[in-house]
Amino acid sequence: MKFSKCLNPSNFVAATDGKMTKFYRCDCFVSHNVFLANYRLHVKYQNERQFWEDYEGVLIERGMEDRGKVLDVVKSEVQRRLNLDENVTKNIEHAKKNYQPLHPHIFSYKRDWFEPKFLEFAEVCEDGLLNQSQIVQRYLDTIGTEIYTIKALKPQFCAQMVQELDNFNNSILQRSRPNTMNSSGLIVEEFGLLDFVNQMISELLSPISKVLFPEWYGSGIDSHKSFSLMYALGKDTELAYHYDNAEITFNICLGNKFSGAEVYFTHMTGEEDEEEYWEADHVPGVVMFHRARHLHGTLPLLSGSRYNLLTWLRSSSVRNKLCPICKSPPKLIPSLHMGDGFTAPS
Ligand SMILES: [Fe+2]
Image (cartoon, rainbow, N blue to C red; front, side):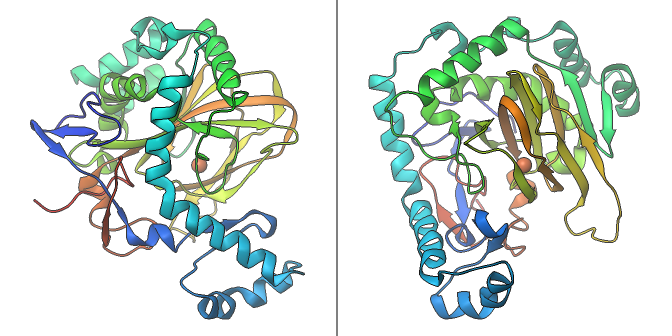
């Protein structure tokens, strides 16, 4: 199985052994893991009665004054998710027709955008001549257990990409928020970077993942969720503790000048007995990568603005067994795009 170049971003997105694959979400997508930022709480919503039974106590403890407002936030997030795929399709079409890029050339994948040592690292992973610990020792800085960094993108590319993201952000184009926790950012489908990211995964991130995280790679990376994030004063400034709905996370810092907004990691979800803590700075051009279910968060930004490109890699052979959000075998609902990376049994 090999991740292949996107053929039609609004429909089928990956090819498996020459056959088109359609992706699904788990039905918990429209009820679980709704994030209430003001209360730093993830909640499940099935109906009002269940919601208040489960969360009224903790919400009062955390200072809830207006029950109606809390319910509105939850219901509007559920509605956003119900409409998400159709809105993404509309936004892609609209942006294709109306967006004027500042730097059109950066939307095409080129090996030239990447640091030579990063390309060499990916090649060494691909050719299989060195084992995992030799590769880690030769190429990577290790932040914590299976959390690595390496300089990946050249400064000129990062600078132009930041300008391009600003340009899109400042346009009047409709866009979807990148996820339930971050509001400032763009999903690559709508921004026009999907082909670039697909090729980067196929040529670089897949071979790296196969060597560094064999147990999460499964029988191959066959879909992803990728988006930019922006941290700036007055916008998103920090990110509460969470894990990513994926198998492997690659997080590339693009710039700019900033202080604070360090990332911290503790233990893997489900390993609550482990007492671990690591902190790491983001550095422009550097990719940080880790197991997606490694719990982490972002400390407050103190000044400036920080842009990152996130790629959550998904392997259906791993996630089809258990949805990482509801922790049950996924109940499939079809998606117009890559969904949450689940596939139907053939
Ligand atoms: Fe994350």
